[in-house]
Length: 438
Ligand code: 2PG
Ligand code: MG
Figure 1 (cartoon, rainbow, N blue to C red):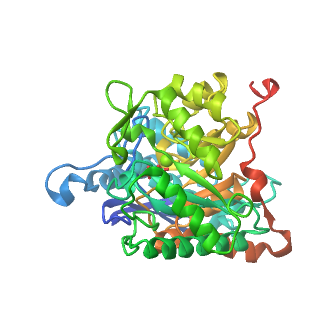
Figure 2: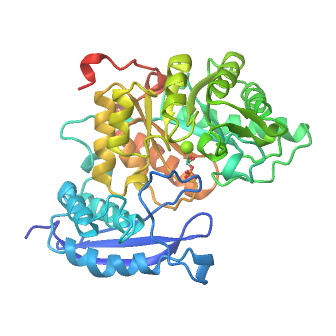
Figure 3: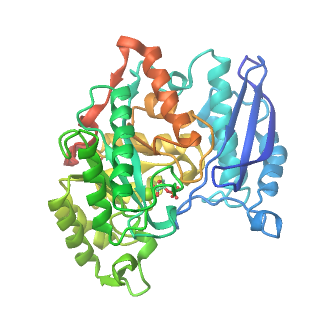
């Protein structure tokens, strides 16, 4: 038995940033180190994500997680007892095997992920190393990510005021991580000023800390962010680009058309939506489009990749941090970047595999928080240790968001001159070469 052997696992029902129950977990190791994790939860949850276990019934409107907590205390704790927490692959394989389903729906992906992360945090503590170092490949240099920061929200994150779910700032010309965050905080402030002058509400804060004004059209969102960048004294497109999360799975109708409710119910066939987005890209400094098409619209995605491939085309619901879906994307040359959310797949090792494969195939990687978040900071460490190059955790306010930015700022200070920063290079599109499509 060594210092990092798992001795005890504790779990409890906690709350996420939307006030919804989630699973908290602590892993205690033989050497006395403890690691804690409280898992996040999405709102625009894709169909191909790992499955959270919710209790149903009347508590918390059916969203309680007492059964998931009981699974951690019982069967999962028993399974990992005596394992070496520093061997993440073994811990995660054991968790997956005990659940026995592909989507972890039997014991709950929320239960499994809580143990997976808490054990990684405990192992790092037990080894007296920061998590970003413990989670990295041996010899890998820590890399601070280019942030993608939420400025305005619509869709499922802001009462569906407009169809596009998120408008984000990408601080292209910032020279280091702290300057990048300062640019984005300025853009959020500048955008709030512009909206208030238009008599739009800025007191409504959306789920990820961005603004949630009632805008007339989707383009009005783009216009507001461009004006906000200029108001911040920065150059749209040169200093700060715009990323959008279209979250198109959310407005796909049964007949395969996309319905823009904010625009009088305008109905678009997939190719028409791609043309609409191409039009936006020609008018606004868009550098990244996430979930431009719905999660199973592979043909629409192919059209988008050919037409819009100069931009970063980021698959969130499309890939669902699932290696099989990513393999299909690489094979069919769909999208050129993958959003990585550990809770979409349920264990850290599975998320790590997706990052490695994407990087090997020339796809950009953006690690991402969820709209329902917690005060945890492990995501920031994973971004640095796994060298994802980009990160998305929401806006520059609300503590569950700033917890991650603050952790990255702290890592930057800790690394000092040794700090490498990914910068705008991280968002440049690298066409996958046939050699890398193994
Ligand atoms: C997304 C995420 C985070 P949710 O769609 O990318 O912004 O939202 O967690 O609601 O899926
Ligand atoms: Mg998304």
